[in-house]
Amino acid sequence: MRVGLVYVISGFGGSLLSALFIQTGISVGASGALFGLLGGMLSELITNWTIYANKVHLTASNKKGFPCNISVLSSLYMQPSCLTLADFCVQFAALLTLLCIIAVNLAVGLLPHVDNFAHIGGFLSGFFLGFVFLIRPQFKWINQKTCPPGYIAPPAQSKHQTYQYVLWVISLIVLIIG
Image: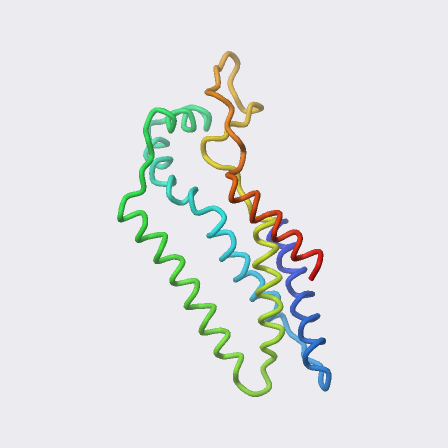
């Protein structure tokens, strides 16, 4: 649902930027919306960077056979999570791959009869929409609705990190103004 919203609104943003800058012709296609998905992927990777850092620890805890996700989450309180060099390399490789895909596709937009304004408008729309729609709660946050009866939860944690809230507010302001 959220990815579909990013797709549709990014397509509209790409068409809008294209109409503003190319007033002598009409262009059609889904490339603005597809670039919006690339922008959304980039903002999702930036916003949820800490989730990917802790993913190795969650996978290791999940193999212990805990009955519900609360036990997995509470086991993370016992183990300090640290980002190893291998984890960082995997995250950096994902970021670098995504940036290369974006750069190559924008370079293809320099060919004649290709509407690069739609690509850029869709990418920027998707990038900012990704901060709004694709934010995920952090691992140490516990949803009290899924706790088993009698479970004593660790101290309450914020559902999101401070930087996620800041990016969310800035993106929402840019989308409303822009």
